Image (cartoon, rainbow, N blue to C red; front, side, top):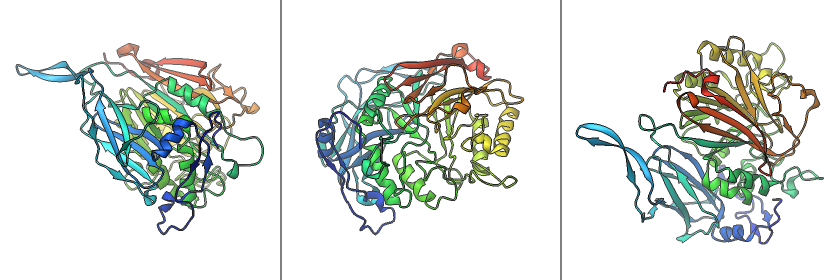
Length: 497
């Protein structure tokens, strides 16, 4: 259950039991869970919302909104432009296109989406793709369930991406990162001290940073033994985690985009042999909607998206992964040939200044561990040698998993610049400290955060030669543990002003 001080009401999950004919059903089938909630959350639940709303992804003209209801209901999203904004546009002046600004109305009207009727078969999830939006604009939005506006007790808004190229400087933006979120539930947890905690504190601290994006790096929940043997139980776990009260403001005001690692895929250290991997993929995609996942018939959660002058490439380190204990001499891959080729092609084709490669496991870690890309040495060498040969610039690697945080810096043989990897963990699970890694030669001094819950921030700032990426770690109370800034030119980028 949630470790929250404010306890007041009662949530009883709907559709309890397993008398469901549809295999995707679990969808609406989950354990009866008793969770005591604060008064505002209880009010939202009474209004029919179990989790969300959550912002999934956004382009220049579209935004995806996700919401989950307590039971079957008709859901509508209403949205309106924030008043008196100055939006960048281009106008025709005497046959010449010129950059200009236009004002949004002082009294904008609400626009309603088409209704979505939620059902048990769809896990009571409603997904809305709001289209035809103004570029680079801020909107307020609200949720209606069965004709009534839901009182969330906090404001919700979204922002479309600006059409900045050839018009203005690249937008400055912030990305929060984190991994390893264990939400306690005593009836399914191990005896002893609860493994998770500090939810109110850490999500409050993340929200105060006002990130445009929350990037979930894997182990975004922890399946228990009863979960990874049935899709219905997987969905019950997701519903339990996603309804965490402390998370709701962040879900509703930042884009939430994620990849997985072992614990939100299947059992500990799970791999391609996991018999419910297709079910796990279906469930994950329902809870983290993206326009597409996988590529050209190759399944997985891997995907990519752009924001400003950065492009993010989220990898799938589980669906195609060979077992960690594969004997020496046998083919051993973490990502598989097709996904690696997709990543190579995507990085070479990218025009982004910063290219952010996101993995569940560490990618540059030089020390011995099965849960790192280096344990799949042939595949790692193939990819990294290609990055050198192709002269891919602007690289930054992100990862989670380790229950400690660190910034690694490695110069791969032949590379023209240092590669950084920012590992951020844990958000709400237990922290750890491995004495064998105390003197990691790749670690940037002062960046090892152990046995403490924490999150990371990426700040994209500046233009031209002053374009910088600042990486920092914050402890659960919002205090800063460390900060490191790199210029685009430090990552091999030849800046064109």
